[in-house]
Image (cartoon, rainbow, N blue to C red; front, side):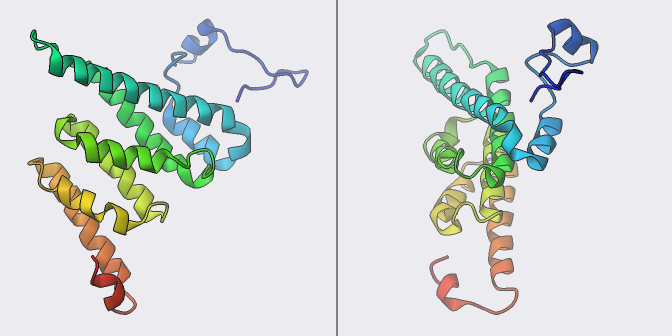
Length: 191
């Protein structure tokens, strides 16, 4: 959302003004945008749509780079900045999903499918960020644990110590929270 000027019209900030403020035009602080979007979701739908398109573009670019590096004889590696960008956008959108459930309805499916299909080939930091985003969605009851339990079990077998600890502790804590008030054998048995 653009700041209004004296007349109440939106002011378009020039690149010079943005850089003078210590930011770059394409790298405005995600945390400040996130807090503003949480306070006033209706006013920031355009920014959300932009972030979601950026996530999808980063995902497509990452998949293309992975396919190229897999097919390449020269061993060209994927650009790590694409993985970092994808990780940042995935966590951002995971935090925003409760405020924009209709606009981000297919996001949890994209996240889970990416982890299911490509977890073994993803960089460790990206894999951890995607898993953290999915855990956040499960904790906020936006994704059913039953549908992702097999995925969390599979993530523990990848040989990534950090990811194994993250997935394992999430499953254990979820079961503990579920049984905190009373033991529910009907829910425990499938888990």
